[in-house]
Length: 312
Image (cartoon, rainbow, N blue to C red):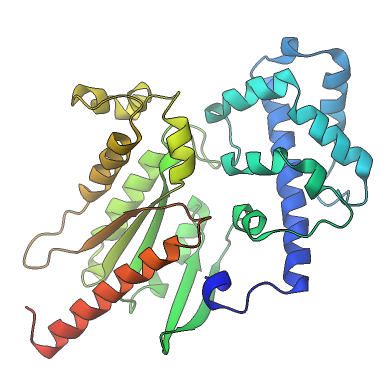
């Protein structure tokens, strides 16, 4: 939104994102180092690499500047290529890590350079946990759009409801690629199951009976990669995928399956049946914003026609 409709990113913004990206790189490699220990993969590497993992695990967030400490950057890059780290990466569904950050790990020589300036793609791939509520306003087509971003983790959900009592639409984002992953806050709770349960609760909430839902099944690119080697039906919660005769490792069938799962959560009935506008997206592709506002225009048009008496 800021790229397409805002003022873009200032030099200060990019400096802040550089720090966040460095934190993403460090915490990501640390998560992999911890997984090597927890998953019993130490036999996949040598003692020197294990000592290096211990060293990296003892670095506190903010303790080093990767652009200034070339030695640490080289060590992180070396670890990413280590066979034990790669074995842990192959089992990433068993622990919490941001899959899209592989793009950072593959270009650490660039990210750790003294003159590194984050690209648009680098910024879009960065991860900062949303805490509380963030509101931004954009003038688009001569109209003011108010975008309210709320924390997705479970501890933040109690802060949501009163921010949406007068809105026209709720944009619900779920990651397609996380069908085999578990919550950061609860490693027994499947992320996709959690998203489905939350969607069902919000979609059928009485407070939102006149509020449209826009569903974005995000991370299409990661999903297309993952489904090639992780069958949906191999995940305990989704055995019915194969039982219904869908082809395994088929990205289109997989996307349709999860879209149907979400649409089934809409329990509202005529004459008050809620509209759900569903899209499969890749949020790091700014062209997807066009789909968002096409959905918004459809909602606004329908509401306008209804208010004018042209649509029941």
